[in-house]
Image (tube, rainbow, N blue to C red; front, side, top):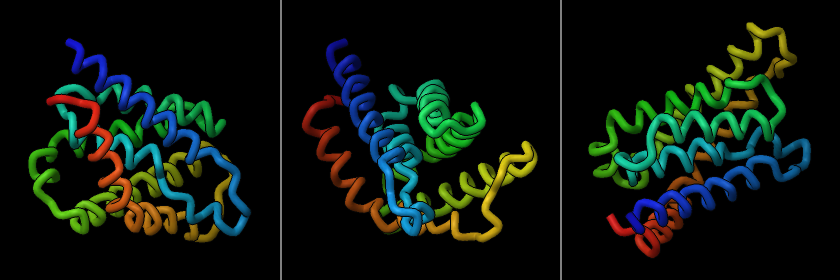
Length: 162
């Protein structure tokens, strides 16, 4: 049982850092390039610990992100739930992919998430950017995925026993 509580603490603390990175102020020109930190952390933890981290965790992580961003409540919760579902469905295959292949999956998940977020904002009459620049976050997320993967894997191996 010690391992289960340790894994929950490590995952929660790492997600806290993802939230910090998600809300840190950036210059206006860099806002579209902000990586999707919470998505990548949920993706990693559901892939690495599929029997401990699941859909409920992703939903709760998305609700917290919705509150932090001050947007429409449930949008990030829904998108992170979809990411976790896809990841859980294919976690054995995803774990066999190289980091470059996983970057492609992260890119795809980010594109789907950004498009769904944009669409939900449009149907709820929220102000949205008319440019497609918001998709740049998918590029930056995919680019930093290999380094983030190595960092999180080292954290998991150092503190969590399977």
